Each structure stands twice: as structure tokens, then as C-alpha cells.
View 1 (cartoon, rainbow, N blue to C red):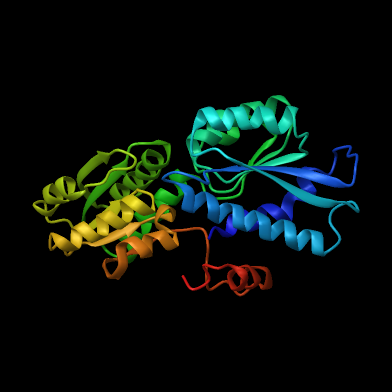
View 2 (view 1 turned 180 degrees about the vertical axis):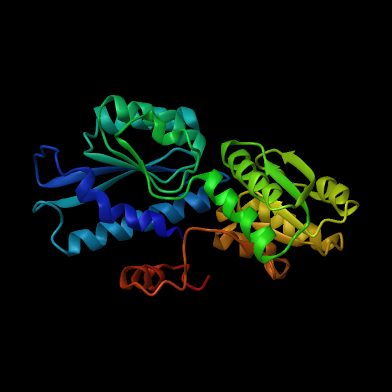
Length: 294
């Protein structure tokens, strides 16, 4: 579950504060991949947004009006995200929109919301160019390059890795994470012994891992989503690889544990959600989330 999706709800009031509203509800658009390979992440983001709406409405709504979430499935497709943007604005008349989707669909649709001056709040898409669409586009998570640098810091300063292999998913998310990671890790004196790219949805990581095993790295940094991440840790274990595996927020899903099972033991990730956060709002979200056992 992505805590960022809940935070979206807390800033709705700021995003729509200057909008003239009619009728009994404030319509908030939401798009995410609810089917296909990314459905688990999209459903998680949707759940967070629904919790936020429920909490706000139970506290009287905003400006005396209740929020209504208008939900669309973009299937992680840029084309669908663009079509949804036009529908949310022109047909549904939303006051603001939440992206619970990945970087590529969000990048494609962000300029449309900017053009129509509809605030777009991005839950977890990390590509740096998204918010460059304009001053109506907001991000509440870390940039991918920033999270990548955090991973490089963890790898070198905390885990003391000297020889590192990088497995880069060949999309906006993966490339941006790896860029930040490699910059930080090399700055801190580590040697990048391999930097291999794999396709989104890759089903067999063993050819990459076999080559990596021969290079004897201390650590493997992988920028895949939960599916590719789970396959990486499972197949690394099957190949007898002893290197520490370091992932990132793409691994932060119950599906990662479901697929990887015991092979997930010992995997370390960087992610936005601090599950030890003592703030009441964070504790409420974690306890309310069906994924609170993670």
C-alpha cells in the first residue's frame, strides 16, 4: 500500500481551494492501472485514495461538500491515460485529479491537465519531467533520481558494498532510479561491475543473473516492479547467488512477497513509507490498510 495515495486526500483542499463549485459534490478524478500487469499497484493506490475520501467526507467534506472519486483504469497505457484526461475534464467536470499510475502514462497526460488548469497530484510516478508540465502538476513522492541516490547511499555507506551489479528496467522509472544510484555509488567509491537492462514484464532474469554471478558482486541493485523484483530474488537464490539484493519502491507490494515467498527473506528496499512512523495519521493509515501486515 502506498502511503502517498492517502496523503493526496489531505491536500485536496489546497488543490481545489480556488475552484468555483456547483452541485452537492466535489468530483475528484483518479486514474491508475486496475487491470493488466500493474493492477496490484493501481489497486493499492485506488484503495489509498478511497480511504482519503472516506476520511475527509466523515469529517464534513470540503467547503461543506462531499468528495466523489471518479475512477478510471488506464492499464498503464499512455494512450488510455490521455483519453481519460479528456474525459475527466470535458465530460466529468472534475475539480482536481490524482494519478495513481506509472511515470509514462502520467507524463503523457500531465500537459493536458496543465492546459486546462486542472490540478494533478501524482501519487508515486517518479520521473523528473512530470512536474515540468507546469504549475498545476504536483508530486508528493521522491524523484526517481533522488530515491536512486538514496539506494546508492544505502549500498555503499550502510551495506559497505564495493562491487555492485545493476539490473535496470528499461523504462522511465528504471532508468531514472539507476542513474541516481550509479552516480551516488560511484561517488562513494564503489565499482559498477555490470549495468544490464531488461524489458518491462521480463519473465526470465536468469541470463542476466548468470552473467552477474560470474562477476562476484557484493550487491545487486534492481529497479524492477514487484513482478520482476520477485523473479530476480527467486532466480538469484536458485542460482546460488549470495550477493545482497537491494530493491526500491517497485518491490513494495504484497505481490512481491506472494511471488517471491521465502526467497524474499533478506531483501532490502528503499521506499517512501516508513512503517515505524509514530504520527497518528501514519499509524491510522497503516492500521486501516489491508496490507498493514507488510
